[in-house]
Image (tube, rainbow, N blue to C red; front, side):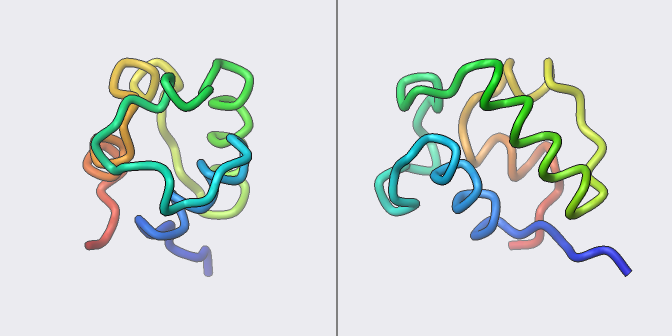
Length: 78
């Protein structure tokens, strides 16, 4: 059985690739302003595919670079 990606884990993983603390990244802020680039985005998507079976297009995430938008796009549990 595959684990479920949660909002908390999403935020932790994003903070990890950006080298920041999860609490320092607001849910509604543009992640590009925190240093998210295409390489880091590919790293995240690869991690989520492997660990959680997430199937999402990089372009969909790139067009909506905020945690709250990703949570909606990925249909994460509240």
